[in-house]
Amino acid sequence: MSMNAKIAIGGVAVGLILLIWLPWWVAFLIVVGVPVAAYLTLDPAQRRRLRRVTRKELGR
Image: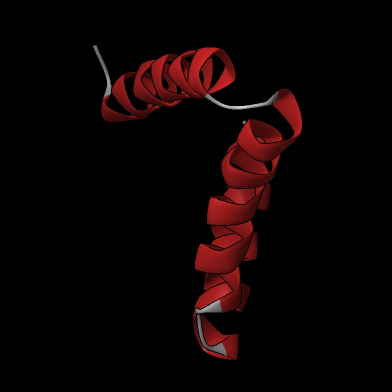
């Protein structure tokens, strides 16, 4: 199993646990907010590199 698949499965598991434990809107804010916060912490050069790699992989 690839690393991305493991991360995706872990994210789904955490999301389901949060939905059971917290109100749905709080769980949604956490699930959406963590990746957004991580992206915003990157410097502009890292953001450009991330966008370039993502586009390149989509063109396969």
